[in-house]
Structures are given as C-alpha cells and as structure tokens.
Amino acid sequence: MQYTECSQKLSDLVQQMRSRFQDREVRRSNSVQGSSRGRSRDQDTRRSLSYDARPFYMPSEGGGSSDNNDHLSPHRQQLGERLYPKVQTLRPSLASKITGMLLELSPAQLLMLLASEDALRQKVDEAVDIILSQGSRENTADALLELDLFNLGGKSKKAATGQRSEEAEEEDELEDSAPLFYQPGIRGFYTPRAGKCTMERLNAFRNVGRIIGLCLLQNELCTLFLNRHVIKYILGRPIRWHDLAFFDSSMYESLRQLVLDAETKNSSTLFSALDLTFSIELCNEEGGDLVELVPGGRDIAVTSQNVYEYVRRYAEYRMIKSQERALQELKTGVLDVIPSSALEGLTAEDFRLLLNGVGEVNVQTLISYTTFNDESGEGGEKLFKFKRWFWSVVEKMNNHERQDLVYFWSGSPALPASEEGFQPMPTIHIRPADDQHLPTANTCISRLYIPLYSSKSILKSKLLLAIKTKNFGFV
Image 1 (cartoon, helix red, strand yellow):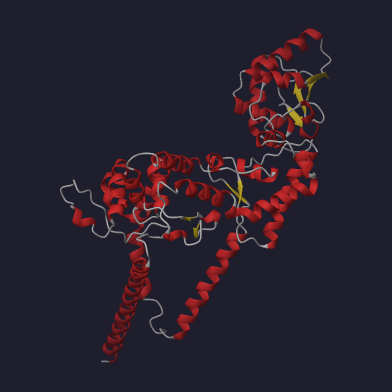
Image 2: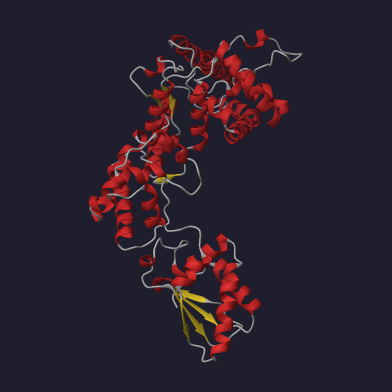
C-alpha cells in the first residue's frame, strides 16, 4: 500500500513538472509573439536560426499553396521565392524547412544570403545541424524533467538564478579575453575587436600600436596585416564606403548592387520586398546587438531615395563606430613612438609596404641584396657553379616556397620595401663540402649557412627540407 502511494506521488510530481515546463514554453512563445505584434514594423530581430520556424512552401509545388505561407508578410514571401531555389540546390530534401528558418533572419542578413553563395552555404549548414540535433535536445529536455523531483521549491530557483548569473559572468570574461583582432573578410587581414572595452583590453591595443610604431621606427617588418580602413584611421585619412570592399567584400557587393538597383524602374517593389530599415544586426565580434544607424532607425525604411545615406552610414558604423575605442588606442600607441608628422603624406599602401614589406618575393631583387662569403676553402669555379645552382633553385620555387626561404633566412616572410629595410643586408656563407647536414640560418643578422653540396639536386632537396621544417633554436 505504501509503495502504491509513493508511486502515485512520484507520478504526480512528474506530471506537475511536465505541466510547468509546458506552461513556461507557452508563456515564452506568447511573449515572443506579443512583442512581435507590438512592433511598428513587421521585422523579426532574431539573429539566430530557430527550429520552431514554420516551413516555406513554393506556390508552384504540388503540396504547397499560398495559404501555407500566410504567417509571412507579402515581402517575406517574395524573398522566400527568391531564396528557395538556391537552398534547394544545396539541400533538396530540407529546402522548405531551411528556407522557413532563414526567413526569420533580418532583412540585412537575407540580403547578404541572396548575394553571397558562401554565406548562404554556411547558414544552410548551420540549419541542417540544428535540425539534426533537435531530436537529441528533446530527449535531453525530457531527462531534465526527472531531475530534482523532491525539491521543486525556492532552493532550485535560487540555484538556477545563480547558474544564470555565473554563465553571464563567464560570457563577459570570455568576451574580454577574446582575441584582440578578428578577420572580417579576406583571410589574413585583421581588424581590432573592442570587446567589453575594459582598461586592460584598451591598454593591450595601445601596446600593439606601440609595437607597430617601433617596427616602423627601426625598419622592422611586422606580420600583422591590418585591414585598409584600420591603416587609414591610424594615418588620419578619411574612410569611405568603398573601403568596405577590403573589410567585407560580400556585403560590399550586396550594397553596391542595391545602389545600382535603386536606379531601375522597379526599385520601389524591390526595396519593399527587402524590408530594410536604418538598423543593422552586428556579429559577435562587433558587439552582437541590433543598432540604429540614425535615431529611430528601425522605423525608417530604406528606399531608392535614401539608399545612399543608408550605405554610407552602414559602412561607417561597421568599420569605425563599432570598434572606435580600440582603433583610437591603436592609433595612440603608434603615435607614442613616432610623431604624426612622420606619417604625413603616406597613403595606406605606403604604410602597408613599410610595415609588412612586399609579399611577392622577387628573385632579382633578392639577388641584388645578397652577398656571398666563402668558408669552404674550394676554388672559384666550384663556388661560381654553386651560386648558379642556388639561384636556379630559388627561381623555380613558387612564391609560397620563396616566402618560406626568406622567413627561414631573415625571420620575416616578406622582403622589405627598400634596401634600407635589411639591417644588415642578407648574406650567404658557404660552408665546407658536406652532403649530410641541412642549411642553417641566423635570422637576427639575415645570414644563411649552406654546405657546399656535391650536386644541384642535393642542394634543392636539403634547402626545401630545411625551410619547410621551420625548426628554430640557438646555433
């Protein structure tokens, strides 16, 4: 009898927990719908994909009709009809579900997906991962219902609140300890990431600026390749919207096409379908918030008349305002070391050459910089033949291999912009004949040590092995 009563109580508690979970989900759903109805425009501000999104059906499909998409505005339905064929080519069996999930993104994000195949493919893969993992999440939710059945009171609520606060603190710490730079577009080119703008983080940006200033002052190459607008900010030059092409080429192309479309006859229909406003959603590296480009921007529609202002403000916010404190500290650090007058007259291209050198290693330039010293004790004919072998091997290298050679030789993968950049000039010391040992280098003085190998093939194999191994130590 006691066992039966205990089982009944346990069953009641489980049912009570399930009811609370369902009520919470209903309240959450209602709050989302209520806030959506309360907006002055039909614009969804969610930044991530949701499995709960309803599928989108093409009107021409046998199993679909326009009534299936009645939860979408006419503008969103038009975007769905443009987006669906692209998704279908990537994921035919899940095209309806994925398109429905994508249509909950912001107009700016949809504009990028329509313009960039890479961005679309990335979002489609993200949607597939969400769909495949939904089953496991539901199982996890059911398992959570069975936890802490005999302590449903205030203690568990306090624990949940404490856990949420700890997670928020951890998130802040992760944001503040995130890398100082990120790659917004072209790989290998970096932009400051302001994060929470704590004093420690801002001081780190200033110190990076000081390192850049020291590199410029002492003719040392720096392997940190900055985006074009960052260099222009340091130089105090105006940053235009065309600089967005070097920052985020996909978005630049989308906005450029938008400007061109504004000149067409059907521009009003196009802009209505896009449903753009003077607000943008930033990625996590840029703050991860929905921001207004002008006061009340989320209620101001982008039209063919104001699209130029939208494009200008969009580029200005993403490149400058979202990271301005970090940019300012970086510039201050540079000016701590060198006076601003030393930067006058420099273009962004000049600055990059001085800081990063020439990425394309020109063999003739390298030959003009290099001198040979003989330590082998052999005659002049052998040395002359060995020099020809060496430059013949270098000429047949691709540019990446030449960069590896220069990196192995001098500690930098690029040549300086001028002869003065090498301090001292690069030298090659020819050691006594030895087919067993690899070449070595002293990067501090740009000195390469090569044994007098007996054949060109041995020289080539030993040199390539040495530069690709990238082992460093004291010699």
